[in-house]
Length: 62
Ligand code: SF4
Image 1 (cartoon, helix red, strand yellow):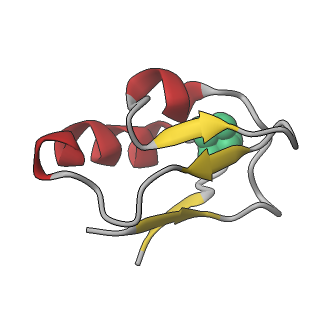
Image 2: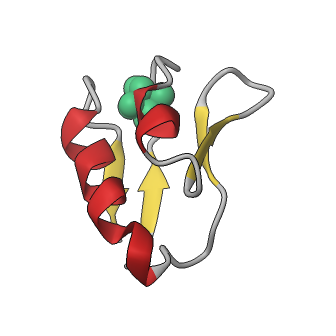
């Protein structure tokens, strides 16, 4: 599973990073960035929760 954050949609609310800090972080730009090339097996559930929790649907699965 791979994910990316659409920088045009992200509002930097930080929800994804709090739900799944191993995959998402708020970067210098103030927007969310994906830290990993591939979502680790044991982080998939948290990652999916982050996708569903994003208020602007900025996180997309690739
Ligand atoms: S939850 Fe969505 S809007 Fe909020 S920081 Fe993450 S990607 Fe951006």
